[in-house]
Image 1 (cartoon, rainbow, N blue to C red):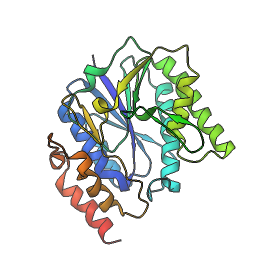
Image 2: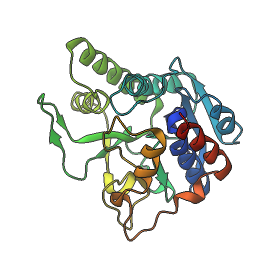
Image 3: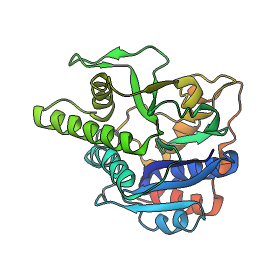
Image 4: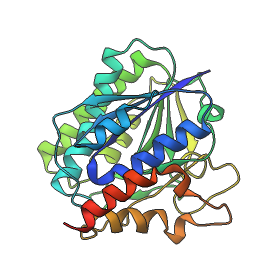
Length: 266
């Protein structure tokens, strides 16, 4: 069984998506295509577009992230579900589609966790969840989601988008993506939903032998420049365990140095 992957990326997050694309390509023999929503990749779009298994999707977002919860970050996260809906609408594919965050390094093929008996599969937090200050309970996260039935998935994502829009109208504090996902799941009792383990599909604070990918989760800083942000996150002690992560082998050194020097001089 083959599958496809969908993510979003922009210029200031470019090294993350480079690691994602290279690690997917090297470690996932059942991967078909990688769809990347261009949320402001700039000159780095061509580099990614030239890869044989990558398709770039246009968006109307050109802002760079200026940290978590910045205007560019908010626009990009809101755009992600909309572009996912567009992809599900315009493509006629029967293979599963995995939506994944761009700041992820893939270690093993995802084929082992895809279960076609479910319409969609979502990832449950290792901690069991928490309640936000506004009372919304968060148990499932939007970092890794599998859509096995594209028609049902399209309907689910549409409801997800509408819930995010409702949050916007009501002035619900950001972020909206994951809380809206949880509320949409609670209201989707007619779906066959499978639950994946965070430690298995997108671990960020602990890794186990079954870990398939590592999520370089943000510490929430809005002051780090993109270089500091990237290098601190990939070298974070949370992501360095007995399982060594050789991130360097997934980076194109020449283009990374170009990107790095560009941000270090601004």
